[in-house]
Image (cartoon, rainbow, N blue to C red):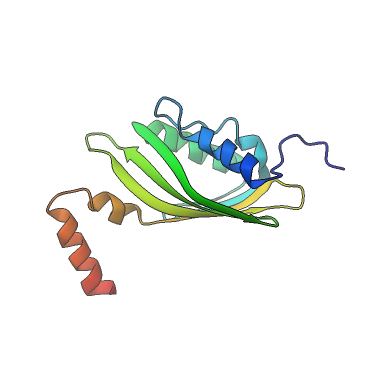
Length: 149
């Protein structure tokens, strides 16, 4: 029997926890959700990859310091067994810029105890940010089509 109160048991619980993370006066706050991560958490996105809860906590602290204003809306989420998949829209304001919307998805794996043990975030950070810069947006998309498409 698991006596740990910090386990994910349903999609509703998970989305409620996640929704609280990015909506605190514009600054993200992971303090309420960190206990739901396993000590061996493996996190990866298009910018960084970290292993272990200490390193993941440091990652969240860096993001909080860099963000002028950050909010996230969960658009869709599904849970099957120990796998959670969600689509989201993050609105972020960096220093001296206007707000940008980043569209992404996260694949989250729970271990057998219900702790988050693996998280992979997928998004096109630069494309979504560059799309908000008049003039540069067309140049960037043209470059991407020419080189990759």
